[in-house]
Amino acid sequence: MRMRPTLSWTPDEDLPPATTDLGPVLDALDTGGVLVLSGAGISTESGIPDYRGEGGSLSRHTPMTFQDFTGSAQARRRYWARSHLGWRTFGRALPNAGHRAVAAFAHHGLLSGVITQNVDGLHQAAGSGEVVELHGSLARVVCLSCGTYSPRHELARRLEEANAGFRPVAAGINPDGDADLTDEQVGDFQVVPCAHCGGVLKPDVVFFGEAVPPRRVEHCRGLVDEAASLLVLGSSLTVMSGLRFVRQAAQAGKPVLIINRDPTRGDRHALSRVALPLGKALTGLAERLAIPIGDPAELG
Image 1: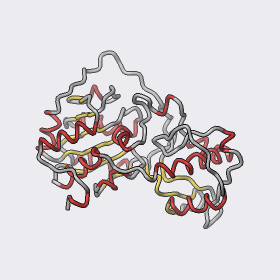
Image 2 (image 1 turned 90 degrees about the vertical axis):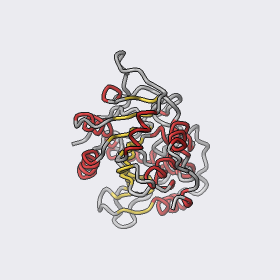
Image 3 (image 1 turned 90 degrees about the horizontal axis):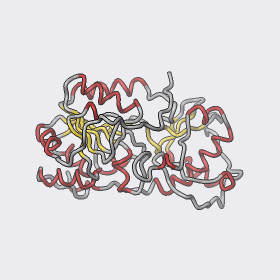
Image 4 (image 1 turned 60 degrees about the vertical axis):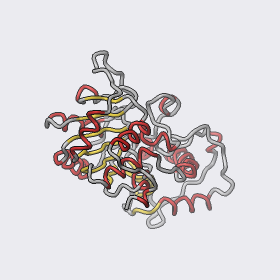
């Protein structure tokens, strides 16, 4: 069953007020067993914009839906042209202090796990080990016909060969790796098929309107069951794929803590929402816990 795409959410007037007090988050980390759920907001300091924050990409860009991608060859051409260009920038993004802080917390045994709604791989690049990529990864490609997985760099090479000279200037980059291009800039971009069976290739990510694989959802539910608390970092929780874990934790009586500058759809379930920039908040927490967040290679 596919999800109905949810692109926006209007905060209720009776949501609890935000705070700048990191005390409850510090207490949770000090206790241990914290499960992190991260969203696009943790990657903004790496140069990847979020969807719904100030200047978020939804103000200018409608993400590709599963139905459009599978139902239209022209939609796939537009997607792959934009995504191919976006990958050149997206693939060069580096983890920021927030990603490194999460990795440091995990290294010091404060976390029970990390679930991310992001598809950028920056948690792993920062040194986090076991990361559940709820919405998949742009670094992989899957064939919708034969199910073969292949690395994104291999597809990038094939697309470069098929589209020599494709060098348009994008107006912006989006959290899904999709660059902003006009139809004229897309032009007659050539999409390549699966190298094994000639089928349609899709990034191994969950598009809007597509369901998260059930086994992945159940794995995440198990992580929530095992956690002492849930810490949400940089997510508006607009889509149910992440909100359901907040609701699950709250129903089980586990503390839910949110660090996000704007209101979220999960605020009413949270012990507190800290309205601070993530980099500042997470580095501040690391300092108070006397945990260094230097180069990941130094964490071992």
